[in-house]
Image (tube, rainbow, N blue to C red):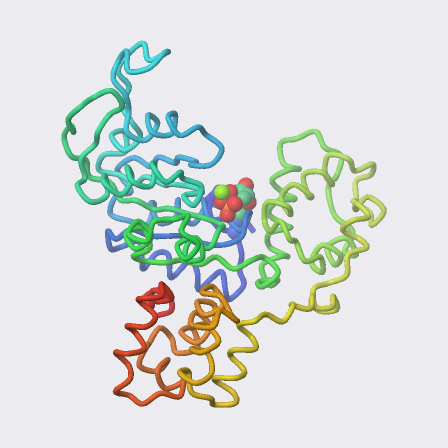
Length: 355
Ligand SMILES: Nc1ncnc2c1ncn2[C@@H]1O[C@H](COP(=O)(O)OP(=O)(O)O)[C@@H](O)[C@H]1O
Ligand SMILES: [Mg+2]
């Protein structure tokens, strides 16, 4: 087996095959893409594949990590700055949006942006015009496709008020969700093989092969850190191997003794107020006005309890408030009244994310 594209998404399971097809298809439009998934699942590789499959593949690809960099630096990184605009700004510097003109910008960890940066990004996305740090008017517009990624739930952040809703909708035009490695174990043999070759080829490592039992253990491990953890584990195995063939003893105990996902007991989730409300309204079919409403008005339950309930029912209704009305045991003509109530009490969860 050879791997032609170094830096491409490896995996021959059905899920990964579907994902690659989906990426290639979605790359064709020029719409913004939001890539979600746990840390280490390969979100950056997805972004690179979007770029390679798109019409912009001849333009530049620029990746910017929005996490762990001070706001002012991120601002100048993205938008550029003019000479003298802050200490250390010895010359004009273009921002990455300008560098990526006609190409693609990958905004990694976009959920970490401060509120002010979120505002600046939104303004840029709306106008396409860049405002450099230290410059008072906007410069020429640039043409970039924005692909962003996050391991956080932006929709939860929107509800909590830490991520701007308008920016969320701008970025989330197309969503690509990358499943965790434990949900696509079919990919593991090929990934193991790929990383093993990568770390043994052209290196003076001793290891030449893996005992089949080692592969079996690696396939069973749940990989909470996803492909990144797997990659590091194999690099470690290759670097520390004492023989030509990697043995079970060489595998760190933490991996060897972890039970596979299927036998690991599911963690009990604590019952929440929203669970009780849900049971009362949806399962026992009590009317919203006679059950939830009075409890809320008498402050037996909080606004966020109501919001959680709405979120849950909205999810079940696939984002359709008409169906929510029915699930709340209301008459169809009470739809407006319900929406008014939820809006007034700031419990109107945006439906788009459940569509
Ligand atoms: N399907 C895959 N095939 C090959 N390498 C992968 C795959 N998924 C992830 N990787 C590798 O795992 C590491 C983490 O991937 P990355 O894209 O940075 O993850 P994320 O951005 O989701 O945290 C990188 O070194 C990447 O090359
Ligand atoms: Mg990443």
